[in-house]
Length: 221
Ligand SMILES: [Zn+2]
Image 1 (cartoon, rainbow, N blue to C red):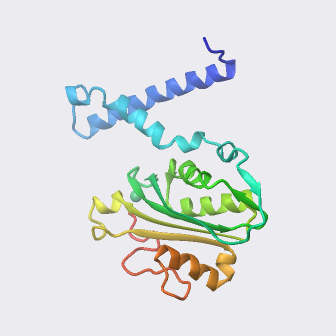
Image 2: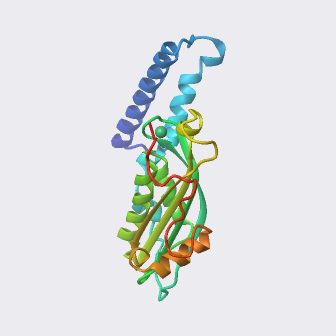
Image 3: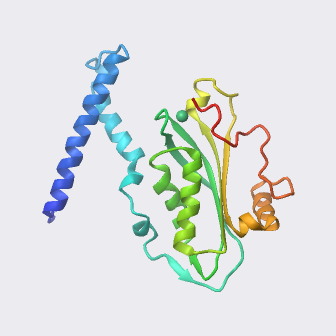
């Protein structure tokens, strides 16, 4: 039998009690929506919802430093490092409905690089929380800035929001586009242009193409 400290026991008891409260709340919700929470198809739904929500908001339990886990390396390299097309799934904090898409991260090292596999992990830490897309974008950029002190960081997120798509608030297939530029990505248009062109977003002048995509939170009711 594994040794469990008193602190871990208390934490486990808290999680169990918390899950029971979530389940009770979901039962109330089902009833208020006009459903019978005791019918066969729904009887285990509160339990499933509690489990799913814990998973989808698991980022609250994760510590960025543990995730990075010393995967920082001193390297003489000052060229752009890009990890693109990082799939992510998050929950909009206004409706508790999913928004999901792709995140593109770039940075230019000053004296340190981070293991490439850690960037998708960082995206996951912040996306598995209740979010708005703008804050998610900023948190990723700020964390990389704080941990790596790079010459610059750029994060672009393109995402579909079910709270808009399912309610017909915006045209189907419309995507929200957000960006966070720090350091040389902010001050040097050529660096920004290089990054945006590599993503296929550039219009040649270092400005994120807007077009049919949204670039703000307008219409997010
Ligand atoms: Zn929403």
